[in-house]
Image 1 (cartoon, rainbow, N blue to C red):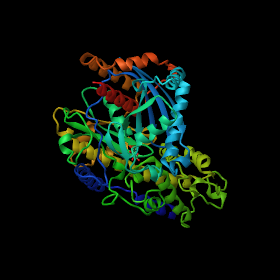
Image 2 (image 1 turned 120 degrees about the vertical axis):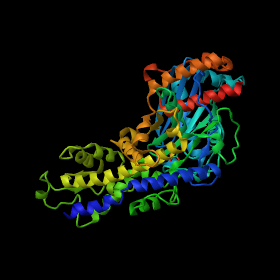
Image 3 (image 1 turned 90 degrees about the vertical axis):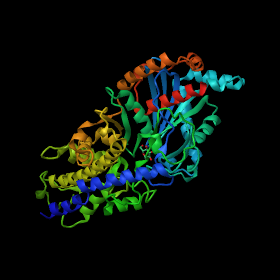
Length: 538
Ligand code: BGC
């Protein structure tokens, strides 16, 4: 059948063989090493100055904000000092026009306003008291709430609360902000509103994920990598200080011999030495706000997969041999009705196909593909798609999803090899924490990653069995691990908490505890903010 063979032609272009996976893994290791030696490489390998995980004895109330994709989240966390904590949050969608605003001020003043809204809503007594003190000129900055800033874009980190934006990703494009310290940009807008808040720590979401996962890792397995496979993709891993050959500028504690490095693997192989490239990858890249950049991310992450499927599907629609979604005669359609696509369908608009449709396609294994056909109708306004139509769509979507998973295995596999943990007789399990819509919601994404890991030289089926990839979003797990960390820290060091305690006592906790939950990245950044604060005071 022509439709079948034409579909196969498309599908085969997304194939990544075991040989390709191995070649890409070697290149990934090479580019990792290059990034550890010098600046300006395609994988940035950014030193984070985080050399240990927080120990949980920190006490106080911290704010955290999270900017990294479609939403902005403001949270406050009460660390109780016994590793229990309560977390409350507000979430707002970032207006599209602010993602491409003319000035950084427009975006950051919006963020500061959300912090104000949050304080008024959840900490109204504290907020009012602070504003009063401020007016009477009696505010002390030690009373300010400390804020951890999860900023999930490539930043050249210059210290725990200082970092200059290298470039925007994930559809953001505000050239005015590039090269500027994002903490200072936020602090300026916070100060303009007179909020009693100090930006204390700057953290990438992958670092937060690694922190949170290392709390929850069962047994003696220590997490080596925090990875995000969501709107964007990236990973942060524990590297030996001796391997970081390029100059580092910030102050840090060298005693652990390790440092967390933010790889910014979304830009792995921007030069396309090994990355597979179809005509649809090229079209997507050319039409993006950052052509030639984030080439790995553009093949792996949720923001882009739907668009690749859309472009490939459009070609099949145009292909007369296939007659996709256009049967002119209802007798060809098992639904006995004629297929129609609305002109308004997302299929005809850039970014019009949400990657979540891929998850529905992958999950539907019914003989009639009924949920996928319903999804095509509701999400893409394709009425009465025939079974063959849905099969074609499913095949293309699966090929794009599978390539993404196998490429994800390249990044994970390379970092496992770099860690040397598989050859370490003391390591049974190599633990990896992951988060993001793909690993959470795309059916079999992790299974496909494991399948490719088995094919990597130096890992193989035995090695893959020892790699544990777990979601780093388990709130209660994180809380439990924090208890252990806090308890240990409290035995060792009971100092430096007075100011923070004073702040906690001052603060009326206006939150509703039923509304509490934990988010990996957020917990990570809160913990780092707390750690930083304790060190500053010592
Ligand atoms: C950013 C990373 C981030 C990742 C996941 C990428 O686009 O460059 O900094 O960690 O998305 O959110």
